[in-house]
Length: 375
Image (cartoon, rainbow, N blue to C red; front, side, top):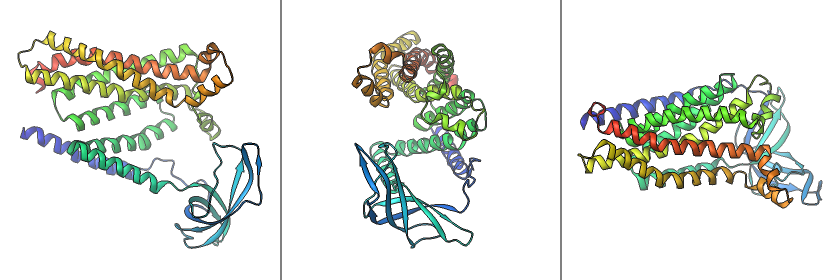
């Protein structure tokens, strides 16, 4: 037991060091693109709607706002900032007196401000409140395991932002990059949540095997469906930004694997944990019976997990499906459209991965939990 605790202590300490390294690690894309500009937090003191006019449901024109800068090199200055309205509900935002905003200011060589544009409402403080609430809730209900979960969460976010995305932008194979980063995150997450236990080894091995299968299926069916990676929102902007050699289709296929990897890992841990409980309470259970128990548990859990995956994916495309229905688009046209076909691909590749992880974890757990060399 002491040896187990030492392993976990060293592992968590090493992970904390890695977290610090990731925080300090530059992405390589941090350079300032626009000289003599600065993003600042500001408070809206007053607004002027005189040049704003209604066009049906939309507003167009230029909302003039008087703001007081609260951060940056020009803190305390009061200036007028423009808020251009384009007639798009998705992109436009309106400010009211007292709002906190994020603005972009520009200045000359002497530091004198020569323009200011309103970017959006300031939400960073609200995001921190929500994250803090999540951290408090998970620690209250999960205790020390909750703290380890937060470490895993932070490591995953930093790995994606500081390693996965920059390496994809540099032209590394998106699928291979996603597979490596995703499996590293899987290993670390499982060890953090379950410790260095037999169930952890079983869940890791089965998750890695299933992740490779999922990647292969994403490549095969992605080509079979004839779907280009430009179906992803904002993906074409990458090409216009100068990343012409970026393989958007491979990025799309890598995204299919990443989107399902968390659910696959979750189910692997669920089954291996359940089988470990069986072996602890029934040490004389036969390996074949243990594997069969895992299969039976998997049958019950897979149904709910695949439905959960369906809800998660289709929820993001709810408005698109509503538009199709509102326009009276025939169901065959809807199913054949690129956006819906891409979502079907996402959903069912993930569901196949979930179906496969159940027998894989059951068989691997059966051999590891009844084999003392993994103790």
